[in-house]
Image 1 (cartoon, helix red, strand yellow):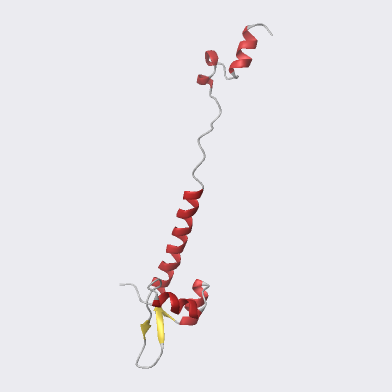
Image 2: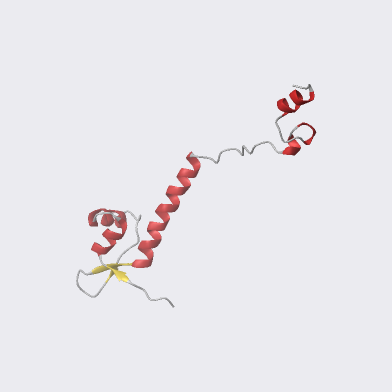
Length: 102
């Protein structure tokens, strides 16, 4: 089993770029992993893997939104030799002009 690493509120704030107060609000709203109470005092910590997973979920959300806003462009590959008249790799206009002797 992998070792569980606890991180402080301050370190959690650094990892997420959120203030300690914002983290507390998100915990209260159920939008952030719950901390673990360490001992009988006020000391709490967060599970590092849960915080990193929360960060990864934010990236997935961002990427999904970006993909929805910017659908992939249609394929615009240039014409191939088989697409041109008589198998000539030049465009059809050029092929027609060559046949007319120009």
